[in-house]
Length: 490
Image 1 (spheres, rainbow, N blue to C red):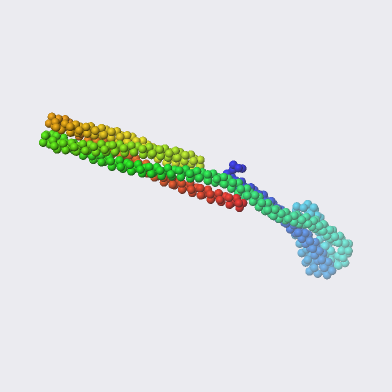
Image 2 (image 1 turned 135 degrees about the horizontal axis):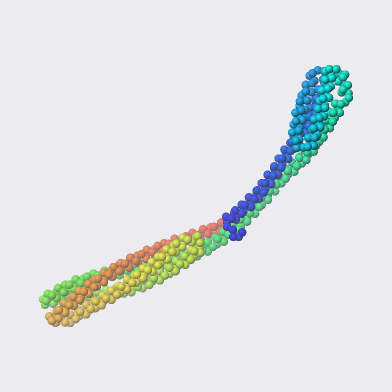
């Protein structure tokens, strides 16, 4: 029975209680039915005795009417005689019906019927003699005591029948009293036994169910505590991840601004290079302007170099931040796996938390993937920066060479034109690289924004999970308190 569920225990308890009540009800019904049957038999016996007494009384009325007629000769005395004669016939028929199940009474009634016929024959003979021959002839017949003998026999037969019915009445009355006592005992002790049995069944159900529910509540409490701990750890990790995402967003914004500055500088360099080429074609009259332009180019190239170096450092910083993001993604993934395991152990109560843990794991995978893409883009940016630095160094060397050979402008003017062309190409490459870098930075910024949104969602989910775990722990405590209260009351 320890493996029975709550529903089966309740069904078993109610089935036992119902069986006990059914047994008591059947016993009470049979006892009451027996009591009613005995009571009906007592009434039947009383009715039979009443009919026998009525039969004897009617015979006496017939004798009284006969004697009055013999003494007076008036027909008015024959009225009770005739009424008694018809009544005796009806009474005999009722007695035959009432005693149909009693063979001895049936035999006795047959004898009584024959004696009654003889008695009425004797009475009819005396009445006829009184009517035709007078009082003396009738009295001579009466003096033979024939009617008295028949009447005495009738009295004896009726008395014997009444005594038999009286014995039946006594026995049936005793059986009725016994049935009544038995019915009272069945109802009283059956109610007591039923109450005790139902109380024992209720106590057993309450004690076993309370223990089972208490064990389950203890497990729920343990699971909710572990769930709270995991939710707290997850919330802390989510907050740290959100902070790191904010730092990365700030760094990416700075990188984007720097890229835009580099693009603007490259555009200006390209424009200046174009002007320098036009000035070189102008000849000696523009040498001084070309010198100033070359100086300006060197200054711009130095700025480009500085910006490229700054961009390289920013790229390294982004790489460091991405390492932190990657580590956080791995930790989040590990936490989500642990949370999924704990949710699976919690059963039905941990299904919602398992879904949240799965979503966190997916977000962690997306963060890891985005981190790899960002690292690839940063490597592209570094490569572009290196190429830009090399190009700017080449331009710087060309400008230095042009400065040293400025005295030989006339003879080396073609070389200056070539170097200006090279500078123009380098500026265009810088412009193209910076545009690509700006595009890459915008993609990185979008990816970081997605990661930040995922971190916020993870933090929100962690808060909801923590709230759910707290509510679950509170419900478990309330249920355990209710079970303990019921167990104490039981």
